[in-house]
Length: 275
Length: 312
Image (cartoon, rainbow over all chains, first blue to last red):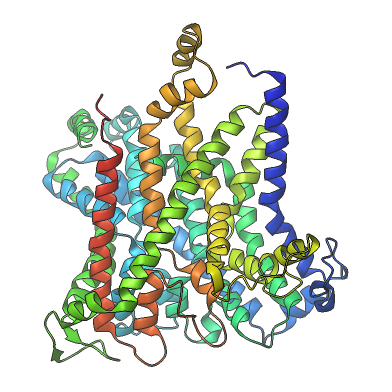
């Protein structure tokens, strides 16, 4: 499609204005994290920060009463463990469901697809009942395990493995390898893009999760960083620079993962929509 | 959907015997299946059981009330209000996000140099949590005090500051809708980009030979050929709007609790199951099941609606 110059200029202008708007919230987080309370609440809006010495940052990370450092650690444990477990569990199941067409396989695939249609967020009341009767309140187990079994991840892997060349597997079988060895030595090393895609989506989802950690992490020491930030907003003792510094350190890990793995994320998102 | 599976299975058959294949299938699938049953299907069953009891502050109730919880919910004005809140929210956010994400995808096609940068700029809010977005929206952009960005701008043109989240004039919808739009529009833009890339360029060439231009091409070629993507986007948008919780809770909850307005279904369920005072898991469970049925009905109806004429 050829684009006339005038249209092209208009497109660039529109895209630039929109890009500024889209990036503005990130800038405001940084600006507030590096400003003083009076600077932020002044009647005149200041675009530039006024406290670049990083004292607030050091204060927030060093103040155990605020709980940011502990909750960053909790979020890291939860997000990494959940991502690793989801990838392994869903990869195996997705592979099995892509290579088998017995009645059992079809029933399991049906159960998986049905779960995609019933939003898991709707089942949080019974899930909580379950977790509390297992004694999982305020534990890593309770935060991680119920979130591991993702029908979405299994379905993505299954769709991906349908496109995997079976010839590679056949030659491994001819060499006497069993299914386990074939999966981990042949299939997985050649499907790392898919692993990265599912891993990225799962990690960002786990890092940003709110409702489930809000229910499970009743002990303040077990809160994830999203829950801690949410508490900041409704507690009177925390000031603007501290809250936004908390937001800044909480958003960095997700942004880093996003920026480095964006290519795989795009691939995963694309696959997720075109089922 | 099952056709390709059968092809693969048959092609692999000679190398392994049926018995070992079946064994490995179960080895691979059991962890996931067990998790799915224990953490999705058992809770749904349990909540069906709980929903028939008076389960105030307990998960092992003895006071059987039959369909009482359902009857209570369906005549509870707060529950019906929450459904109405969802309908209003969905009617705004679904078409708006749909149009904006498609618009961004089409805009990026006009961009040559820097396309990757702009795409990333529109996509990067996906990495932000609703909690952090709510924090920025409520404390900086739409702070009800004079120093909020929106109020600063209103004052600079001589208007009075607005108490965005206080409930008057439903201003909170503006806050909630812009927040969700910002956070998720890039995700759906990526889906539309993939959909647009899947259209054969020859179709456009043929159209331009026939003299079709601009909006005509979009209306008669692009949009109809995008139908599978459009259906997927609309369905995901609807399911996600139905699940809205994080941004409502974090934007509107205060030291004094959650305000009486803007309570979508999940917020209602949360407050009734875990809120102060009346923790009633029986009613919460009944609500869960009603919502599950409603969301299934909605997605099926929308799918049906959007695929009218798809065979032509």
